[in-house]
Image (cartoon, rainbow, N blue to C red; front, side, top):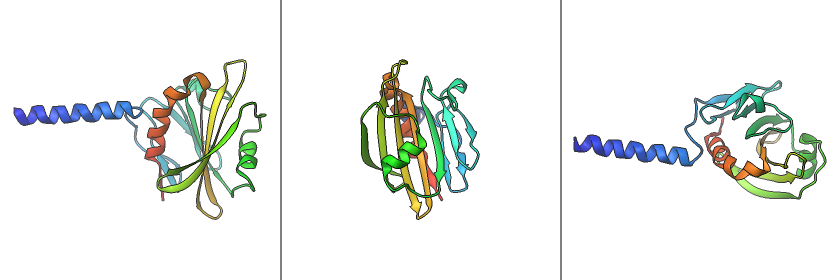
Length: 169
């Protein structure tokens, strides 16, 4: 009985940790032959032409120009553009109205960089983070995370959980 209570307490602690990190993750989704990742339970996703995947918290936001909730898009890119800003402009052709910041991070142990910006729009603005990961020359991926600026901080735990689940092969 005492052992059962201890196991129950451990299971409850793990559940709290999962919820705090963005929630339980669903089964792995294969975005391309070289990338797999997991989305929070309840998220919807679809494959993109040319390899890649888009996922969102709601069906309505899946592939929306301006999602009303969190959305993540993973795309392969043939090679990095001459500058991060040039590649970012190619992925997001809309004009920049907010400051662009460049940061360093890792995804599945791979050194990566990301560009983050917030736009000022009538809808309240959108924050976008695009992460650039190079596996080898000519084999690069972008992860684009988008959410309304007003909910960016509450979307981060889900984004962090997804990125922590990424596996490159």
